[in-house]
Length: 319
Image (tube, rainbow, N blue to C red):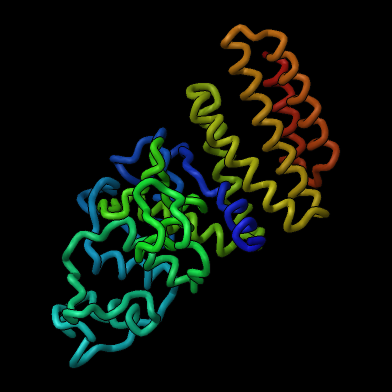
């Protein structure tokens, strides 16, 4: 149970946010999947489909899904000649090496009819299973209870979707449905890959700090124009900087970044309170913002952090 709690708690930081710029014409600044999409494209896992469009709503085939999973997990692909293990996958097919590698690694399994159905659309349940098995996921007791309305206990996909839902890899709707048989689109695939990388690298401060800076840049880009988006990013920035702080609590730069994240969160709360004419509450958030920014300034070991803390104090003074 402790292992489940730790993983789920960490995964709460793998969330939707926006960014200041996009590599694709069809991904706007307000797109909640911009960071995951930029991550998978910058890493070379996915790319444009037509022109300079990512087409996040486009479905993937089962073969494409396997190729992405194998690539993102650095699984070696063998040369293929003769049988691939499936009657409907030829050794000459471009995706055959990835399918054989996934079969060898236990990421996919043989079926009674000895077919893989490579061109069929991959579902949310199937993709979650592939990704989790690529990370040596242990089923344990994850499939014994019905945690979501459309994920019956003991269904073949229950362990994978129960974990994926609770960990935040996949989002349930307001009625608690995860839609296991629904196709998963390219945007959702990017999101799952990004989040699983955050889980796997949760003790890697270099990895986490890189994305903390990305989140901070995105927050600042939306601070004046879209407080709802900025608040969403701020919550996630706090989560990721707190995880980094837990990894290395004595690093002054990491401590300063965590305090700056808190200060930004307080600042946005104050701005929202002021908009709603909750003036007393706004002043309380203003005081908290200034206090936290001053803490960041005092502990910071670089001028850039000190300058950022001073900037936040100035922004708070306008509340």
